[in-house]
Image (cartoon, protein in one colour):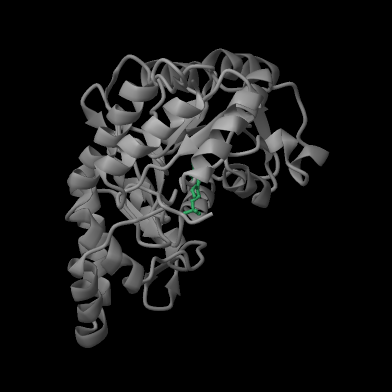
Length: 362
Ligand SMILES: Cc1ncc(COP(=O)(O)O)c(C=O)c1O
């Protein structure tokens, strides 16, 4: 098949090249990294930003910051990318998998409470903002407070989403981001951690850089989780167009919803989400056969789609030791797929995708 509309298609212009050239010619590495972090902090409304190599390591660092270790359990969704549970496993802790809510496809908060009742060793809830949809923070943070657990929010797909007017990353818990190529903003590879207070921020900066508080003075444990200047230059250039990217992606989602709202099911964000930044266009058909037929028809028209994450409890590796009954996650996996949603496609592309999907379903 000739690909007419790719699933992943980041958009770059001359700014990336100009900033990269400065890194090479003027050795502006450190200032570029600082500028990228400042620009991100300003956009989010939280200056405590620590960039790292990628979103997976951002999660590992977040878990290390709250001292997750072998005696701890961490609640995580089963309907997610393996990179969410692998950092928990890396630290010797036990993931407690929880099912999804059928409307948001985020963690089902009733099931989270049920899991907390049965697992007093839980130290943290790792919430993944699926497709960019933030959690119902009021309820999630209330649960966390009542059970004395910490919230870590994986907002890899949610940069720019807002809850009650505040941006994801500006609330009093740890938030992680990814800048992989499918995201709203990309550095090719990159990630960041948003910290809720200065103490955590300093701890995180030390952890990222060998625990060094001065040259070869190691006052804490640390490794090298630093983002390279080359990646930071790309990220800084992308920041200049971020708002434009977010609006463009929302227009694409509006087109998809207006054509397909009656045919396919879209995620429903919680009521207090005041702005969505869509990381993925996840749509659900009424059954697996209908989903597969739609994918086949779109593929014939040159439109790339993806079947999103196979749930963790179904993965060949993880299913050997992470088991359970997760009917919603299974159903979402069986019936959903993702349409192209990227900065590089045009609104005409979106209309073409939507029309092809409509005709596949009539
Ligand atoms: C929800 C989620 N978490 C974690 C990651 C991992 O990020 P990275 O690929 O930057 O390691 C991704 C994306 O790739 C993701 O979508």
